[in-house]
Amino acid sequence: MSEIMIQMARRAAVCAEEIKKHKEVQLVSHIDADGISSGAIIAKALEEAGIEYEMLFVKQLDEAIVRDLADTNPELTIFTDLGSGQIEHINNYGLRAIVSDHHRPQGDMDLHLNPHLFGANGSFEISGSGTTFILASQLGKNNNLADLAIVGCVGDMQYRKYGKLVSLNREILEDNPSFVIPKNDISLYGKQTRPVFKMLQFSSDPYLPGLSGSEDACIDFLHKIGLRSANDEKWRRWIDLTEEEKVRVTSSLLQYSVQNGLSSYNINRLVSECYLLLQENEGTEMRDASEYATLLNATGRYMQAETGMAVCMGDREDAYEAARRLLYEHRKNLVEGLNFVRDNGVTQLSHLQFFDAGSSIPETIVGIVAGMSHASNNRRIPIIAFADKDDGHKVSARGTQELVNKGLNLSEAISQICQEIGGAGGGHDIAAGATVPFGKKEEFIEKLNSIIASQIVSKA
Image (cartoon, rainbow, N blue to C red; front, side):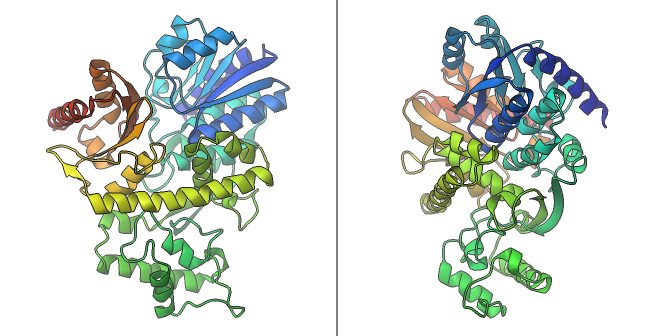
């Protein structure tokens, strides 16, 4: 066990002792895959410990939500995958709370479990679900929750920097081989559940020129390399193929991608380390950590995070079917969003590029579309996306690890601008988001371009 893991476990033990003093707690978590799996991890640990809870999912934690929570006067509130940016408000409103988060802290408190406090980076070394898994492990023998911890960190793209899970995430993975194992494989979504041609057709990350969105083109591609439907005329899934067939499809897809101008970055991502959840049934979304995370993201992005949490808690009937329906709509919306960006293009400034989706892309998925579009546009500068929401402009910003190495910190830049022009925002150095007031979009983008320029120059 690493020294940082030991230190985090010690802090988690202090937090667990506080939890054990209470008969009922209020849980608050984020609506993405990391937040939903974090909420499920602590909820399962509380059930095992015989402690009741109320669950609240939020898109973004702000002062108003903290104030409303304080007004209800819960015995104890546990924040998972959020809270580290609102410690001042938590303290000011006298909310008795535990924060289990991995975002960069703004302030500190006694019962605060966060990798940054111990010298680890929450962008790639451990996620909110991993942090909360450490907390759950101090509440009882909860190593059976390790698979959810991996689902959360995969959903949070923690593997992107090195192409695999490392550091504290790796410790969780390797300490629990009976629950989850790594395997090098094609990285497209749908290996467990979709016919192979559908896996190609609905590939949006990366977007495959000439294949994504076209069923006929995908079937034709597979026919040309000798892969046809099974004898009963039913197309097979990836998991139904022989190893020889998988190698043939993968090598042909790599060759096709080179010939059709896919970036070297995306070509390298076509094969990666994937994570299989051994306690889940083969042929379901939950067997593959990436598919499981995408399923959870779909529920959260459409404001039904409770459905995703019910799946995490074991509901494989009504909640699972509801989540699958949301996932289908989610994948369709992502392809439509990518087509919008492709058709309308992006505006390039000196140190960033941006697009304004208005109401054409739901604000709950515009960040995902931005990240996917970045792979097809200029990766030498970050991409910023705007979308309309009720109380202002939703901003989603995505960078690359190479840019972070040069000094980019989107979280710091966006937090600074929000303090100057109003709004609220934060996140990670490589990915961040905000809500800015109507009428402030142009000022926001000019200030952000200027700050990013200074970040890159100062590092150089």
